Image 1 (cartoon, helix red, strand yellow):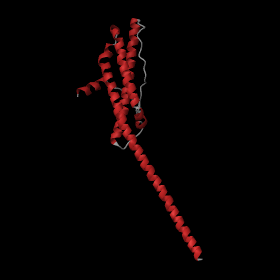
Image 2 (cartoon, rainbow, N blue to C red):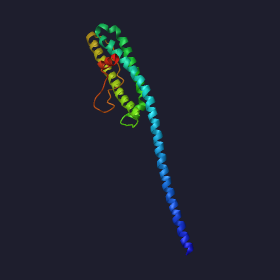
Image 3 (cartoon, one colour):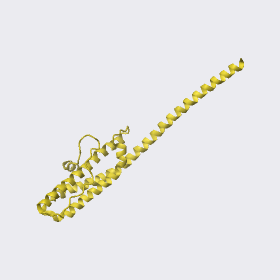
Image 4 (tube, rainbow, N blue to C red):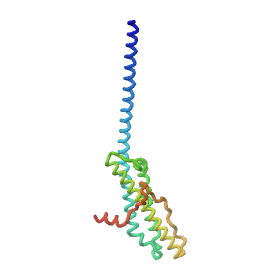
Length: 196
């Protein structure tokens, strides 16, 4: 009888220890996963901040190219200035190169910012700024190239000069934030920013 009570007591204590061990292991796994998720989130946030700086530089380079194009070249594109055609194309090449660099720099940002929210205010602001600037740059580029191509088509029709070629449009308009607005840089906005 004493052995049976002893065996029951040992079984009960073993079961309790086993249950506590299982619960402890489960809690450990949850805490470990939470810490791992936190480390990954912090790493992703650092990568966003770093990528944003590279993206910003490329977007600013495009902005300078676009201002040059819109300030000096856009109004110069006409049949009387066909001799400047190579310069017009060089300007568009420079804009395209800037957009290409921006596109490379935006890969990580697209993956980690689009349709995502962050509790870190700085990271969220960078993601919001990225999406706004990305959309503006791509759409401005598309509008500028389409405008150029329209003017070249008009010149070709007027002068019958078949040597003039339309510029190859490498990108399409985007609505990265899905607000149904295809934002672009408005020249008046740029002029106001440079005056301030």
